[in-house]
Length: 283
Image (cartoon, rainbow, N blue to C red):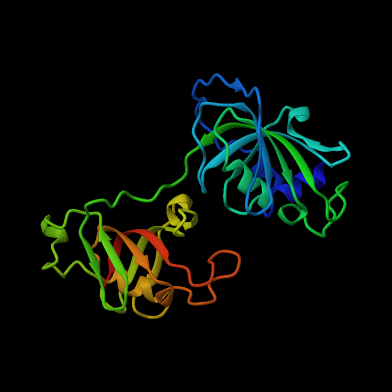
């Protein structure tokens, strides 16, 4: 039903649902039927049973996934089915674009898996009724993970130069600091307070969830350094970079969003990780 699909893909237009996020053919995969499927339960109360085992990759937060599904109530009433429409459903995992039970459940699968989710109301629509779905409904979904398009991943920082400041900010330099333009002794191509800087970035939580990315938008972020326009960890960290330099900033909550966090996006007392590139400086 149209009302269900609109709520399933929270916050995005129906037009986006029809725009393909995939530009490649899925890798060959021969699924295997599970002879004795077991039902498992997560800490949040989601029950899942993998009935056919695929051989593809497992998605991570930020990946684009393509899924076929049929949704039912506990009385077997079907309220929606992408299979019936012959139109797989596409969304980005871990971005709150779908109900919590879907974000949690799809992350447990591999490409080619077929599974059944039993989603309690708290991970579905709670006390809200949606179309033919009554309030406080347990939802049952038969799902198949068809494809995954990998999103942005954290940079590999193994073995890279690391500096920890007195404030607790950790800067891991990805660029070769032996190059003249990135040498710690060279400061004329580093920004100072009041300069306008242009930065590409992707922000992650400690569990690897990406919560924001200028790279995905294709538009660097601009701000005036040292003017309190960004979190303290950014003002401090970007000032330690050279133009063109890449680094990973590991920012304690005291230099980020504090004890409260940013409701709906950043948890309380969250350490944040930013992969950044200082694209340009305007003195």
